[in-house]
Length: 262
Image 1 (cartoon, one colour):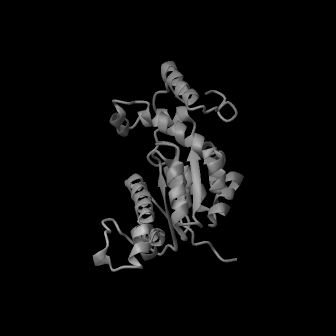
Image 2 (cartoon, rainbow, N blue to C red):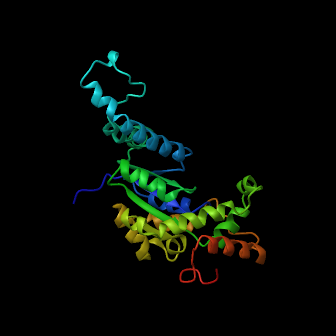
Image 3 (cartoon, one colour):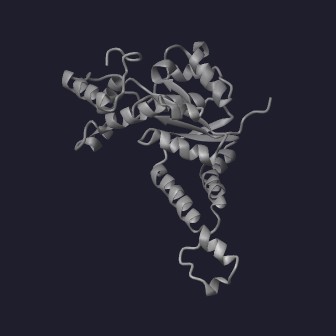
C-alpha cells in the first residue's frame, strides 16, 4: 500500500487542551513532523480570500485584453487568472514547512493550532491541500480553563478573562457540526487521548490510521513523560463555572452527553 504524503493539520478548541501532547504523540514517527502553532493563519486566509475575490472580479478586464492592446484600455485592477492562487499558496506553505521537514528527513509535515476560527482555517487548508488530514481536538472546558489560569499567558486576557472560553465554545460547536463531517475531519478529545496507554487505546489507534502513520512503542513513553503540564493548582470557583456554563448556553453548546458535570 502506498503511504500518504498528505499534510496533517490539528485544530484544537483553545489553549491548554492537550494539543502539545497530541503533537508529541504524532511526532514519534520518522515519517511526519508536526510543527508548532503558526502566528499568521488569519491574515494568510484573509489574503487568500481577497486574492480570490479580486482576481475573479477582474475577469472582464482579462476578457477585454484579449480583444485590444492593454495600452489602449482602462484596466486599473487587471490581474492574472485566479487559477494560479491555489498553487501559489501551496508553494508558500511547502516552502515554509515541507522543505524544512524534508531537510530533517521527514517526508510529511503538519502543524497544530489552538486559536479562533478552527473550522474556517480547516476549510482554507482543505482548499489548498485537498488530501490533507484534518484533526479537530478539544478538552473539558473546565479543565482547559483551569489549566490556562495557572499559566503566565493567562495574564494576556486580563481585560477579557473568559475570552478563551468564547473561543472554545465556538470551535467546539464547529467541530461537531455537519461541516466538520463534510471536511472528513477526525474528531478526538483530550480525555480520549489519555484514556489508556497508546498501545492499548483504540481511539488513538484510529487517529494514527486516519493520519496514515505507524504507532510506535515510543508513544507509551510520551504519555508517561509529562512536559509543560499544569495539573497542580486551584480548581475553578462556582462563579467561574457558572460563567462558563452561561457562555456555552449562549453558544447553544450542549455538553450533557459528553461532560455531564458541565
